[in-house]
Length: 289
Ligand SMILES: [Fe+2]
Image (tube, rainbow, N blue to C red):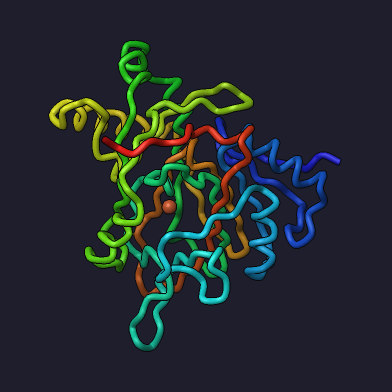
Protein backbone atom coordinates (compact mmCIF):
# COMPACT_ATOMS: atom_id res chain seq x y z
CA UNK A 1 0.00 0.00 0.00
CA UNK A 2 1.43 3.34 -1.01
CA UNK A 3 2.05 5.86 1.72
CA UNK A 4 -0.06 8.98 1.54
CA UNK A 5 1.82 12.24 1.18
CA UNK A 6 1.21 15.94 0.89
CA UNK A 7 3.58 18.60 -0.44
CA UNK A 8 5.60 20.84 1.89
CA UNK A 9 6.66 23.32 -0.80
CA UNK A 10 5.56 23.74 -4.41
CA UNK A 11 8.88 22.36 -5.67
CA UNK A 12 10.21 19.92 -3.09
CA UNK A 13 9.55 18.04 0.12
CA UNK A 14 6.57 16.01 1.27
CA UNK A 15 4.86 15.13 4.51
CA UNK A 16 4.27 11.40 4.90
CA UNK A 17 0.92 10.74 6.53
CA UNK A 18 -0.35 7.89 8.68
CA UNK A 19 2.77 6.02 9.64
CA UNK A 20 4.03 4.87 13.02
CA UNK A 21 7.82 4.84 12.98
CA UNK A 22 8.00 2.54 16.02
CA UNK A 23 7.20 -0.37 13.75
CA UNK A 24 7.42 0.52 10.05
CA UNK A 25 7.07 -2.42 7.66
CA UNK A 26 9.79 -3.27 5.15
CA UNK A 27 7.47 -2.01 2.41
CA UNK A 28 7.05 1.33 4.23
CA UNK A 29 10.83 1.69 4.57
CA UNK A 30 11.23 1.04 0.84
CA UNK A 31 8.66 3.75 0.13
CA UNK A 32 10.37 6.20 2.47
CA UNK A 33 13.69 5.45 0.70
CA UNK A 34 12.04 6.11 -2.68
CA UNK A 35 10.40 9.32 -1.48
CA UNK A 36 13.73 10.47 -0.11
CA UNK A 37 15.33 10.03 -3.54
CA UNK A 38 12.62 12.22 -5.04
CA UNK A 39 12.52 14.79 -2.22
CA UNK A 40 15.50 16.01 -0.19
CA UNK A 41 13.22 16.81 2.78
CA UNK A 42 10.58 14.55 4.36
CA UNK A 43 8.32 15.37 7.31
CA UNK A 44 6.56 12.79 9.48
CA UNK A 45 4.37 14.15 12.29
CA UNK A 46 2.99 12.90 15.61
CA UNK A 47 5.67 10.36 16.42
CA UNK A 48 6.35 9.07 19.92
CA UNK A 49 9.79 7.48 19.91
CA UNK A 50 12.34 6.76 22.57
CA UNK A 51 16.00 6.99 21.62
CA UNK A 52 16.32 3.28 20.91
CA UNK A 53 13.36 3.45 18.51
CA UNK A 54 14.79 6.51 16.76
CA UNK A 55 18.13 4.72 16.39
CA UNK A 56 16.42 1.56 15.11
CA UNK A 57 14.47 3.55 12.49
CA UNK A 58 17.64 5.44 11.48
CA UNK A 59 19.54 2.20 10.99
CA UNK A 60 16.96 1.01 8.50
CA UNK A 61 17.75 4.03 6.30
CA UNK A 62 21.54 3.75 6.35
CA UNK A 63 24.62 3.00 8.45
CA UNK A 64 24.45 5.16 11.53
CA UNK A 65 27.09 7.75 12.38
CA UNK A 66 28.57 8.61 15.77
CA UNK A 67 29.28 12.35 16.00
CA UNK A 68 32.87 13.40 16.55
CA UNK A 69 31.84 15.65 19.47
CA UNK A 70 31.29 13.88 22.79
CA UNK A 71 29.81 16.86 24.67
CA UNK A 72 26.57 17.00 22.68
CA UNK A 73 25.74 13.30 22.50
CA UNK A 74 22.93 11.73 24.48
CA UNK A 75 24.42 10.31 27.68
CA UNK A 76 22.58 7.03 27.09
CA UNK A 77 23.13 6.57 23.35
CA UNK A 78 26.16 7.97 21.51
CA UNK A 79 24.24 7.68 18.21
CA UNK A 80 21.93 10.52 19.30
CA UNK A 81 23.01 14.18 19.33
CA UNK A 82 20.99 16.65 21.42
CA UNK A 83 20.08 19.98 19.84
CA UNK A 84 18.90 22.05 22.77
CA UNK A 85 19.11 25.23 24.83
CA UNK A 86 18.39 23.32 28.05
CA UNK A 87 20.94 23.55 30.84
CA UNK A 88 21.59 21.59 33.98
CA UNK A 89 21.39 23.43 37.34
CA UNK A 90 25.19 23.62 37.11
CA UNK A 91 24.80 25.73 33.97
CA UNK A 92 26.11 23.03 31.66
CA UNK A 93 24.34 22.85 28.30
CA UNK A 94 22.92 19.43 27.59
CA UNK A 95 23.35 19.77 23.83
CA UNK A 96 24.36 21.93 20.87
CA UNK A 97 23.24 25.19 19.28
CA UNK A 98 21.52 26.87 22.30
CA UNK A 99 19.03 29.52 21.10
CA UNK A 100 20.87 31.77 18.66
CA UNK A 101 20.65 31.68 14.89
CA UNK A 102 22.27 28.62 13.31
CA UNK A 103 23.06 30.18 9.97
CA UNK A 104 22.91 28.33 6.66
CA UNK A 105 25.08 25.22 6.64
CA UNK A 106 25.22 21.57 5.60
CA UNK A 107 25.96 18.96 8.26
CA UNK A 108 29.21 16.97 8.26
CA UNK A 109 30.57 18.39 4.98
CA UNK A 110 33.96 18.74 6.70
CA UNK A 111 34.39 14.96 6.63
CA UNK A 112 35.95 12.89 3.80
CA UNK A 113 32.77 10.81 3.76
CA UNK A 114 29.93 12.95 5.10
CA UNK A 115 26.98 11.23 6.77
CA UNK A 116 24.55 13.21 4.65
CA UNK A 117 21.27 11.73 5.88
CA UNK A 118 20.06 13.77 8.87
CA UNK A 119 17.04 13.16 11.08
CA UNK A 120 15.69 15.59 13.68
CA UNK A 121 13.03 14.51 16.14
CA UNK A 122 11.21 17.27 18.02
CA UNK A 123 10.72 16.37 21.69
CA UNK A 124 9.97 19.87 23.00
CA UNK A 125 9.62 22.90 20.71
CA UNK A 126 8.36 26.45 21.32
CA UNK A 127 5.24 27.29 19.36
CA UNK A 128 5.93 29.56 16.41
CA UNK A 129 9.62 30.00 17.28
CA UNK A 130 12.93 28.29 16.47
CA UNK A 131 11.80 27.42 12.95
CA UNK A 132 14.19 25.49 10.69
CA UNK A 133 14.49 26.17 6.96
CA UNK A 134 15.92 24.09 4.13
CA UNK A 135 17.25 25.50 0.85
CA UNK A 136 17.23 23.16 -2.17
CA UNK A 137 20.66 23.25 -3.79
CA UNK A 138 19.54 21.32 -6.88
CA UNK A 139 16.90 23.92 -7.72
CA UNK A 140 19.54 26.59 -7.12
CA UNK A 141 21.94 24.86 -9.52
CA UNK A 142 19.29 24.44 -12.21
CA UNK A 143 18.42 28.15 -11.98
CA UNK A 144 22.02 29.38 -12.35
CA UNK A 145 22.95 31.00 -15.67
CA UNK A 146 24.82 28.56 -17.94
CA UNK A 147 28.02 30.64 -18.00
CA UNK A 148 28.26 30.49 -14.23
CA UNK A 149 27.46 26.75 -14.23
CA UNK A 150 30.29 26.16 -16.71
CA UNK A 151 32.66 28.07 -14.43
CA UNK A 152 31.63 26.19 -11.27
CA UNK A 153 31.21 22.67 -12.73
CA UNK A 154 34.91 21.60 -12.55
CA UNK A 155 35.63 23.23 -9.17
CA UNK A 156 36.30 21.60 -5.85
CA UNK A 157 35.64 23.32 -2.54
CA UNK A 158 37.96 23.24 0.47
CA UNK A 159 36.14 22.28 3.67
CA UNK A 160 37.06 22.48 7.35
CA UNK A 161 35.22 21.92 10.62
CA UNK A 162 33.83 25.22 11.93
CA UNK A 163 30.92 26.18 14.14
CA UNK A 164 28.87 29.33 14.38
CA UNK A 165 29.29 31.41 17.50
CA UNK A 166 25.79 30.49 18.76
CA UNK A 167 27.28 27.26 19.99
CA UNK A 168 28.77 27.04 23.45
CA UNK A 169 31.85 25.14 22.35
CA UNK A 170 35.08 27.04 22.96
CA UNK A 171 37.77 27.78 20.40
CA UNK A 172 40.10 25.24 22.04
CA UNK A 173 37.54 22.46 21.62
CA UNK A 174 36.99 23.45 17.99
CA UNK A 175 40.73 23.19 17.41
CA UNK A 176 40.76 19.73 19.04
CA UNK A 177 37.98 18.59 16.68
CA UNK A 178 39.79 20.11 13.72
CA UNK A 179 42.82 18.02 14.66
CA UNK A 180 40.60 14.92 14.38
CA UNK A 181 39.06 16.03 11.08
CA UNK A 182 41.72 17.23 8.62
CA UNK A 183 40.51 19.60 5.91
CA UNK A 184 39.05 17.95 2.81
CA UNK A 185 38.03 18.85 -0.74
CA UNK A 186 34.69 17.92 -2.30
CA UNK A 187 33.28 18.68 -5.76
CA UNK A 188 31.17 21.83 -5.67
CA UNK A 189 28.64 20.16 -7.95
CA UNK A 190 27.25 16.77 -6.94
CA UNK A 191 25.33 14.37 -9.15
CA UNK A 192 22.58 12.47 -7.37
CA UNK A 193 22.63 8.76 -8.19
CA UNK A 194 19.27 7.49 -9.32
CA UNK A 195 18.01 10.79 -10.72
CA UNK A 196 21.16 12.25 -12.30
CA UNK A 197 20.13 15.65 -10.93
CA UNK A 198 22.95 17.95 -10.06
CA UNK A 199 23.21 20.39 -7.20
CA UNK A 200 25.62 22.80 -5.58
CA UNK A 201 27.58 21.50 -2.62
CA UNK A 202 29.14 24.13 -0.43
CA UNK A 203 28.74 25.44 3.07
CA UNK A 204 28.67 29.20 3.75
CA UNK A 205 30.92 28.76 6.79
CA UNK A 206 32.84 25.50 6.35
CA UNK A 207 33.78 25.88 2.66
CA UNK A 208 36.66 28.28 3.19
CA UNK A 209 38.11 28.24 -0.31
CA UNK A 210 38.23 26.69 -3.77
CA UNK A 211 41.07 24.38 -4.79
CA UNK A 212 43.73 26.17 -6.85
CA UNK A 213 41.99 29.56 -6.60
CA UNK A 214 43.25 32.63 -4.75
CA UNK A 215 41.03 33.86 -1.90
CA UNK A 216 40.44 37.17 -3.73
CA UNK A 217 38.75 35.17 -6.47
CA UNK A 218 37.13 32.35 -4.46
CA UNK A 219 35.53 34.48 -1.75
CA UNK A 220 33.32 36.60 -4.00
CA UNK A 221 32.36 33.51 -6.04
CA UNK A 222 31.40 31.54 -2.91
CA UNK A 223 29.46 34.54 -1.56
CA UNK A 224 27.60 34.95 -4.84
CA UNK A 225 26.66 31.25 -4.90
CA UNK A 226 25.50 31.29 -1.27
CA UNK A 227 23.33 34.33 -1.89
CA UNK A 228 21.76 32.57 -4.87
CA UNK A 229 21.30 29.21 -3.07
CA UNK A 230 19.47 30.81 -0.17
CA UNK A 231 17.02 32.83 -2.29
CA UNK A 232 13.52 32.47 -0.86
CA UNK A 233 12.24 30.67 -3.95
CA UNK A 234 14.40 27.64 -3.04
CA UNK A 235 13.53 27.65 0.68
CA UNK A 236 11.03 25.66 2.71
CA UNK A 237 10.50 26.94 6.27
CA UNK A 238 9.18 24.52 8.88
CA UNK A 239 7.31 25.41 12.04
CA UNK A 240 7.96 22.56 14.45
CA UNK A 241 5.34 20.67 16.41
CA UNK A 242 6.13 18.23 19.20
CA UNK A 243 6.50 14.75 17.69
CA UNK A 244 7.75 15.95 14.29
CA UNK A 245 10.48 14.07 12.51
CA UNK A 246 12.24 15.69 9.56
CA UNK A 247 14.63 13.75 7.35
CA UNK A 248 16.89 15.58 4.93
CA UNK A 249 19.84 14.88 2.67
CA UNK A 250 22.67 17.32 3.32
CA UNK A 251 24.01 16.70 -0.18
CA UNK A 252 20.89 18.33 -1.62
CA UNK A 253 19.92 21.06 0.86
CA UNK A 254 21.36 23.67 3.17
CA UNK A 255 19.55 24.37 6.43
CA UNK A 256 19.32 27.11 9.06
CA UNK A 257 17.62 27.56 12.41
CA UNK A 258 16.20 30.96 13.35
CA UNK A 259 17.10 32.45 16.75
CA UNK A 260 14.46 32.26 19.49
CA UNK A 261 13.84 33.53 23.01
CA UNK A 262 16.33 31.65 25.23
CA UNK A 263 13.76 31.18 28.02
CA UNK A 264 11.68 28.93 25.76
CA UNK A 265 12.69 25.29 26.24
CA UNK A 266 13.60 23.44 23.04
CA UNK A 267 14.94 19.91 22.62
CA UNK A 268 15.40 17.95 19.43
CA UNK A 269 17.23 14.68 18.97
CA UNK A 270 19.36 14.14 15.89
CA UNK A 271 20.70 11.04 14.27
CA UNK A 272 22.67 10.92 11.03
CA UNK A 273 23.21 8.10 8.56
CA UNK A 274 25.34 7.21 5.56
CA UNK A 275 22.89 6.62 2.76
CA UNK A 276 23.57 3.42 0.79
CA UNK A 277 26.00 3.75 -2.17
CA UNK A 278 23.23 3.83 -4.79
CA UNK A 279 21.84 6.96 -3.13
CA UNK A 280 25.01 8.59 -1.86
CA UNK A 281 26.21 11.47 -4.04
CA UNK A 282 29.50 12.61 -2.49
CA UNK A 283 32.61 11.07 -4.06
CA UNK A 284 35.15 9.94 -1.52
CA UNK A 285 37.10 13.07 -0.64
CA UNK A 286 40.81 13.69 -0.67
CA UNK A 287 42.72 15.73 1.89
CA UNK A 288 42.93 19.43 1.05
CA UNK A 289 46.39 20.14 -0.30
FE1 LIG B 1 22.75 21.35 11.16
